[in-house]
Length: 108
Length: 92
Image 1 (cartoon, each protein chain N blue to C red):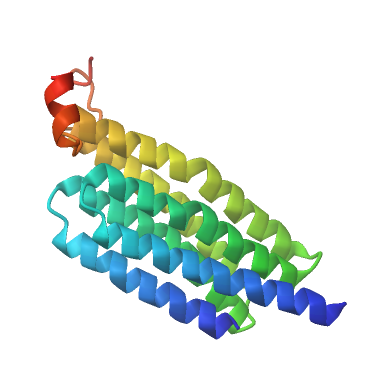
Image 2 (image 1 turned 90 degrees about the vertical axis):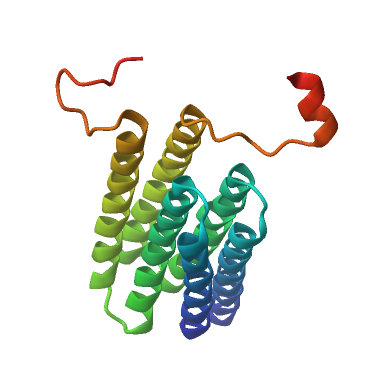
């Protein structure tokens, strides 16, 4: 049982770290600001969630798990809020999204 | 295993810092700073487990709170041009 929990925790930690790296690579390689926001959300949801789940499995039913749950709730509530404010501020400052050629001519 | 997770988080932080330095617009830099905050919270938690000191989790909570307040403050500044002084701007 303990070995199973250890293996699950290991898998969650490694997967979370991999998702964080994927989000960061997307942050570098995406062509446009709004697509970069999409790539960064991978880090905030899958990466952070899986890392926290792996650490919770290591901690067991203790106060540490409660603190990890608090951190998870904090990230899950504040990260979409910050992203929404960021995109709204970018739109207000007239940062145009990158559109396809035909679509850009037909819409405007 | 926590060492592997911490190494992966450090690699991700380095990549995000590249975007924060190169970012063409200011919003790219703010986005990179926000992601840096999330990754730092995760790195603090992992370091707490790595060294066996759960006090680091409290630091992670505080850092997460400061991160969102800082992001919202910077965005409000770039949206309105001030941080909410009475009688100046701010109206739609």
